[in-house]
Image 1 (tube, rainbow, N blue to C red):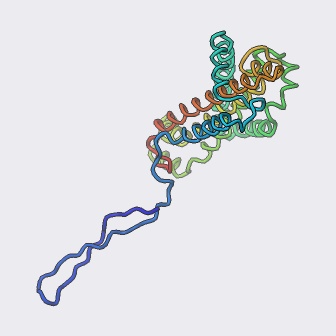
Image 2: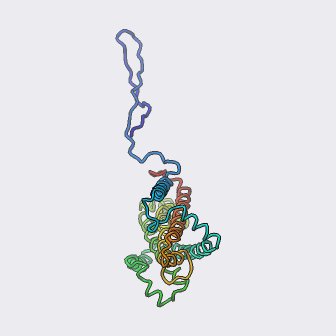
Amino acid sequence: MTDTYPATVARTVSSPHSPTTVTVAAPPVRRRRLGPGRPIPYGRAIGPVLLLAVWVLASATAVLDPRILSAPWTVVATAADLIESGKLQDSVATSLQRAALGFLFGAVAGVTLAVAAGLSRIGEAVIDGPVQIKRAIPSLGLIPLLILWLGIGETFKIVVIALGVAVTMYVQTHAALTGIDSRFVELAQVQGYSRWQFLRHVVVPGALPGFFIGLRLGVTGSWLSLIVLEQINATSGIGYLMYQAQNYAQTEIIVVGLAVYGLFGFFSDAALRLTERRVLSWRRTLTS
């Protein structure tokens, strides 16, 4: 793909038949576009819409066996029945509460640990090692131990979600903090910045990109953990609803649950992406 740019160089030509000198503009220069190009309006919705279209077409032509995957209209009718009975709202409210609390506690803990380890050698020596060890151990692998410690109540589920989010937030924020160019630190010292000015003008702008990446990965991880947790020792929530449907081979209810998880994950990530774009509007990136 190429773009045409206006001429920036002009040539001066002297005619042998005339004493005057004329200036001839150089021909336009064609340069190959190396970036991804201009953004497509609502481009991120194109993939899901195409996937839905394939599902509708396969169900309508009986290519897709409803015993394997229910048709979209069956799923919609089932969702309407669940909403009318109030089961879906109750399950969604329970799942949202678990995910929000786990994400909140995990994000606060992860950022606090990252700041302590990223701005202090003592903090790095004390904190970074244990967090890296925890990163090598999946949060779901701690479920047996956490059940012994905390039981199978709400605290256990929130702690498991928070552990996964905290590690993700820590890794991304700590990497952004330690990746700040040392020349900016030296410049702040030359300018005589106070500790507060250094944090405000150097540390925060440098850490924000990693912080937002951690937020987006953390919110996605919280939904993934929730799906597993609500199908283990749970008596409420979307995952419990799906687990009950599995026992009766009700694929339409399972798809409703998956759709709810997918919508929550998609819109929460979109909200964070929009916030990131506005907060980091000073950056010029490939996706700007």
